[in-house]
Length: 177
Image (cartoon, rainbow, N blue to C red):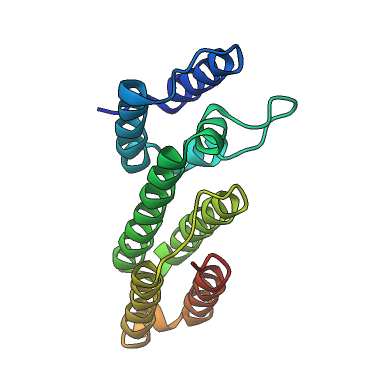
């Protein structure tokens, strides 16, 4: 099971502080453990926590997650893969969950939150869509739009659906590989 986001960030900051003092910690077994925690965390952490972990902090140069990813190519790759999988899975889940027009504003808010996470991760160098992920997001949004256009009730909110689709198309274009 994954550490909660804040203990993970503290662990990252502590490991990087010890590295700065000359101790080679972020390799071998500790790097293996951090990679496993990162993998599990990207699957389990709430979106707001992931967004917080992706924020830059002054003067230390980033959260524990960002510092670890700058230090370790393996952890950077793990974060990138895990975050991409999570964004794709979340976009698909949100779009599948829309059953009534009153659910559209909440779905839009959730998709915008994941888009914000993806943009922040991309800016930090730990997020990008590969071709398969890009296709999955576009496919999920296309199916959602088709389903909404076929439903008289959901058709009432088609402008919102089109806005969601457009924001995801812009996202996959901007966060490409």
